[in-house]
Amino acid sequence: MQKGFEQKLGGLVKRFEDLGRMMVNPDTISDYAATSKEYSDLQPIVALILEHREAIKERDDLKELLSDPEMKEMAEADLQALNKLVPKLERDIQLALLPKDEADEKNAILEVRAGTGGDEAGLFAAELYRMYQRYAEIRGWKFETMDYSETGVGGIKEATATISGKNVFARLKFESGVHRVQRVPVTESGGRIHTSAATVAVLPEAEEVDIQINENDLRIDVFRSSGPGGQSVNTTDSAVRITHIPTGVVVQQQDEKSQHKNKAKALKVLRARLYDMERQKKDAERSAARKGQVGSGDRSERIRTYNFPQGRVTDHRINKTEHNITDMMLGAGLDEFVEALMAADQAEKLSAVADDLGQ
Image (cartoon, rainbow, N blue to C red; front, side, top):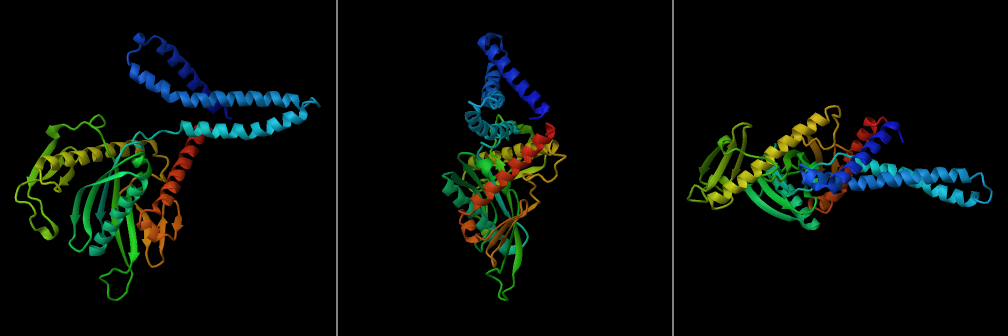
């Protein structure tokens, strides 16, 4: 293990010990909750560090026993096990040191919009939306539609849903971007393959403590909601459009018959978008030197292609192709890509940690 790494670990152990002494006298701590959380967060990594130190010491002691003919055989067997354990502990420590995404444990707001391609783009957007709905069902998550704007031919202009459950955002955050489809549309009589697109955004659901919204920064407009083709579906001004003036972010909700409920939903989506903007800004600052970041979350980035004639799905960020398009659209095949994207992101972060420590 490199000297810089050892120094960092020594600093973590010292900080943990200092916090332990501070917590003996809680009256002397200005923010006990924050101190307690830091102590609790450090506990598992310090346990790994101490286990690693003990393994190194035991390995060094065993090496000295190799010169003793009576102890050599036993020492070699134990040494072989320790030579496997030490690198494993070092990797576990590195994983524990990876920067945590505070949003990973949050629920998510899913937004799917039709892109280029006319009616075919709307149909594909609707299929993507159902794919995520089925994936949520498979994982035992709660999927609740907030807004659903249809095209009138079975497709959607845009749709929004909240997805609640364990590690929802951690598993879905890499889905943000442009999804491209290649196939013969049902409206195409000549049998030509068309390329269309839909845009997906996955936002961490933000609480009021995560992002404060000043009412004076909002312009709220109310109007009558409309269905496919623009026909009125409500005789009262229940639809709500909220504009966040400082950022220009606009959110619209019209699914509920109650103006109050639509406003509450719109504020929920607005809070998530503003929180995501803050996260994106911080991520960009932290990863300015790493342009190829897996989880860039760029909404304009083409991330995946669904080729129906060939039955294949390709994720362009990790160069992964699977011939499982039927399973994919049913939600069952999505996990293969989710797991691969999470592993690639972890590997990239591990590499960055190693670079920072001069390894």
